[in-house]
Length: 229
Image (cartoon, rainbow, N blue to C red; front, side):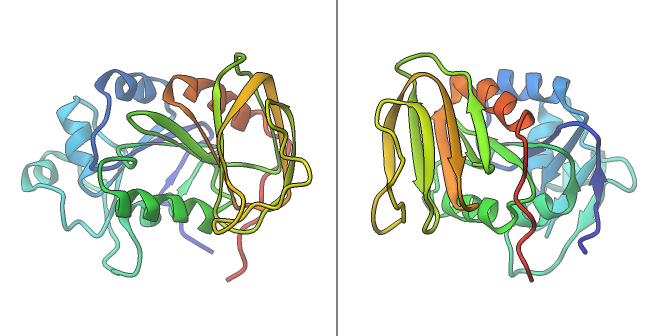
């Protein structure tokens, strides 16, 4: 069982070292029950005047100035190099929802590594906000309050099927996989309801719909169990 380095009853904001929107970051910090940084995300938070409750990672990119500015007991160094700092942070946060900023940036390899972690810990409900998109691994069932015409992309991380209501192109009867059918640029006809059979499907919405995705995740009736091993 993984040790929880930050435990909260409400949402936790987790910040990485990538680019963030200052306004969105400030609002997310204000609404969060706790704030964590993945390594150099501590520099981003301190620059915004936000002191994290925990900094988790291998500490190979946090600045000396950030280290010196942090209160005692906040730094949690995990030296192993077999996982990313996002992986290290997400698996050691216990909260009903983790909201990630600064992880969907310019480098494609970093973004893909982050998305793979969502599938690795399906029991950790996480919403990622980037410059253009809001992304989450879908729970078994979710309802999203979206206006007609909203872009809804469904991207499989492995073989997965599902059912839908409120999409212009329903997904019922389709077998999704990264090397087969994918669901780029579907479209809402109104509120969308999705039922997914495995923890392998990402939903990607315009970042303006991040709050709708957050509400949908918070109201989910069930979550995925932790992966064995």
